[in-house]
Image 1 (cartoon, rainbow, N blue to C red):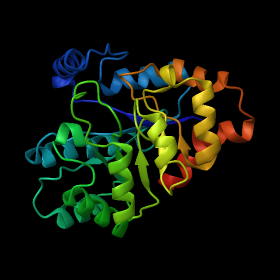
Image 2 (cartoon, helix red, strand yellow):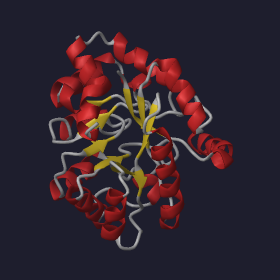
Image 3 (spheres, rainbow, N blue to C red):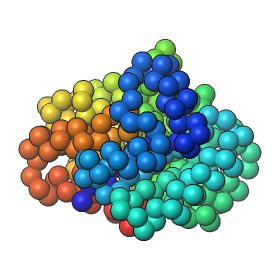
Length: 268
C-alpha cells in the first residue's frame, strides 16, 4: 500500500490557468495537469492507493468555495480506488476561526492545509497559533508548507526557527511540516526540528535531498514520523516512489514511510 500525503488538485474549469500561473511564478514545470483525473492517472501509474489533497486558501473569501470543492472530492472518492481524501482550507485572516474550524470538523474533514508564504503571515503569528489551538481541540491534522517556496524566495515565512516557536507555543502531535521539515533548509531542520513531536512529509524534496541527508534525518527524527508525499503536480509520483525504494530501507521502515504512519495519523 502507498499513501501520498501531499498533493494538489483544482476544479477542471480553473486547473489549466492555475497550473500555468503557479508554474510561471515558481519556475517549476508541472508533472500533471492539476485536475482530479490527472492526479488519479498518476496514482495508477505509480501504484498509489490513496492521495491526500491539500487546498491552499490565498484569501479568506475563498473559504466556502474551496471547502465546497473539497467536500465534493471526499464524497465522490470515499469508496473509490484509487481514493482521494481532501483536507479543508483555512486562512489566518478568516473571521471566527474557532467557528470555522468547528465547521471543518463537523463536515468530516480530517485536517487543514496552511501555506504561510501564499497567505502572507509568518507561521508563528498568533493567527496561526489560534488555528493550531483549534486543530488540537478538534483533533485535526495540520499540514503546513515549511522552508523555501520557489515563488517567494526573498521572504521565508516558515523557517525552522519559526516552526519551532509555533511548536513551543502549541504542541500538537498532528502537525506536519512539509518538505522534510523545511525545503532547502534541511540543516536547520536537522538541528532544530528533528526529534520534535511533529511529522515531516517528503513532498517535492526527494529529487534533491539525497540518500545521505535523508538517512540522517530519518535516524534523528525517527521512521515513525515521516510520511511519503509527492507534492503532485510539482513532482512525479512514480519517480518519488522509486526514489524511496532505491534508498534500500528495510521493509518495516519502508512500510512506515509509505503507509503505516499515514494510516495512523488519519485514523483510516
